[in-house]
Image (cartoon, rainbow, N blue to C red):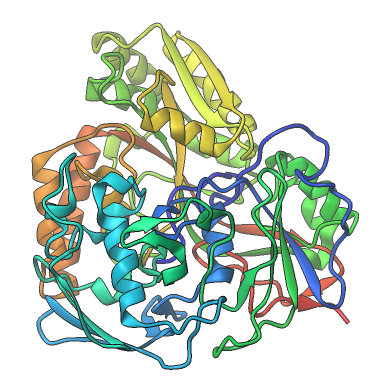
Length: 533
């Protein structure tokens, strides 16, 4: 669950983001790989580093070092307590969260129940504009914090019991609430983060104070690097390295060259153009592992050019997913014809039906009958390794629909998100998703609900919203999955997005590190990584 959301890269779909030219890192590019005490990991420029405002994988990777979640997940995707001592409920509506004693923030403040309550209320309060506000929607009183003039600043469903205990009352029962608690939005923030109750200091994001295994070393050096160092007072399992440099790159190819030269230690996503040579280039330092990423093409449904579902279905039918997966990604990804990841219970193959099948003849007929536009723009983040597959897609649309299709690169993922969120004219646009927590609901609610936190395309269907809500309130997992599957069937009819590919982690590292692992959320395990002897 903690990983999160929108994914900037694509070669292996999730997390990072990059931006500019082919000139090494965003920093000096010459600090080298690991020493006995430090390692370097490539990321892209995060959009945010406030827990309740971090909804993409670059920022999530950094927060994974600075904070410890209430729960994490085992090999079967089941939650287990980390910062929490226990998370219990007798009715799936009123939950009691007891914290482990001994956690402190990096400034020495003791972590208490109020630190969670204050952070969550800040995240939920609509005027604060937090990207992950949606994740508090299930808590009683959330609605009173919404709108231009909210009725309240604190959710009625949050109550302190004692310094290490608080209760969370939901508006409706939710079977997966304990599972949700591994997500970024549910992290605490210290008193030092606020200049007044409910008012976050402007400076906090530049040097976030967490309660995790690493603390900030200096401040966020935008478009260059973020340095963290081991927090010696951390009560959990200690990292094996003393420092980590999250080095911000603008080009995956530049980062790949640095890994080969031992000037960068970990590259979480390999550039598409290197997938053929990487096994030979890296040898046993070429790695793959399961992950939850999902790449898709989204449409501004409020744009008259794309308002007709048949236009969207025709574009889907004009794209040969299998060919692009084979030719561009060298089989490292899997064609997607469903809206949720195969790693989840409830996944079904080919839920898109005929709309997911490559059929250029029928696609052109449907497109013309639906009055599709004569020109299609596909916007994407140029820092994510997407150019090759976007070019291939554009060429297919030209050939199969007889339209003028053009790929448009925004410098950074954050730039694309900003334009999309502001509903600027970007045409169709590429997005990726990494699950926040292991539930079908996480692939449905945030992306497609009317008020979903990452519904950047304006999609709204009351019946879909109703089914997702009913699934969330189900008493058993089987009942929940049945409702979620019905909701997914509605997506197949409306096609607000086009599923393209499911991914896996495909990554590489230098000769200077070992025990490099990545999780389903496409994050490097910062506890296990260590310098090679």
